[in-house]
Image 1 (cartoon, rainbow, N blue to C red):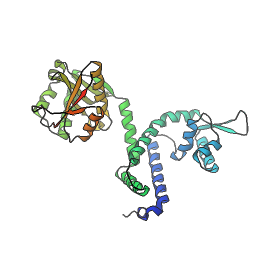
Image 2 (cartoon, one colour; image 1 turned 90 degrees about the horizontal axis):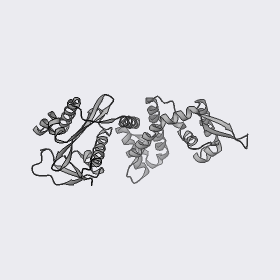
Image 3 (cartoon, rainbow, N blue to C red; image 1 turned 90 degrees about the vertical axis):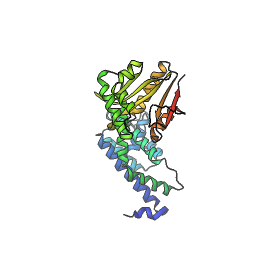
Image 4 (cartoon, rainbow, N blue to C red; image 1 turned 120 degrees about the horizontal axis):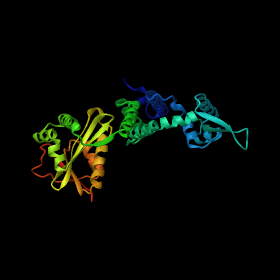
Length: 317
């Protein structure tokens, strides 16, 4: 269906901005509802000012937001009705009311702040656009909204951050051997294929890694193993290898948690460097490796992996 408002062009700028604003407010409300938070996104600017100030007047809020007195008063009445703020008399002028967060308001801040952080993150991500005009910018932004709902992106980001904060990195135990095998086999079948060398190592992690002074780490969420990685001795250094994350938890930065743990472990134990093998089609992975300061080095002719077309190294000392 043709977007009539979009076709109007620059003359419809005000209506376009209102449509985007209304959409983002509705989507933000869906986020609050998802996490059972009783809050109205239209109350956010006034509530945030009250939160940032240790006592503020109605007039000061108006001056900060450049809104009308009736609009501010209406918002304050809604916040009072929700019992999120309290009004106290000014010590020097009893006609003046000073606005503070209530106990319930302070409690709400603790619950809602992680959502605000995710909302801000997704807004930055969605609006990082190169364009020649505001209308072009809006066209691209609304297309992003069509590709993925603003609320869904925020909810996923909140859940991702919640997950990573509850992940525990643990050392190898024999009882985790099956998880080590299954996670890696699933990953290989999803992105490549299982080579004979993979099958041999994954089936015998103690023989090929642990008993050779290697290390295997696991990302544990509650009682569930959701990711794994190994540091395998190779040519006087250690290969960061066999990293795999459960498909149910990909996109939650678990791989980065495992990588950082390996780097911290290697640094603590005075490893001189780490190496890894990968494939250039894994663009996101290569980007992350470079983010952690791995640099590309030549792949040897007798590389243990047929699928590998890039080798990288991280110098630690």
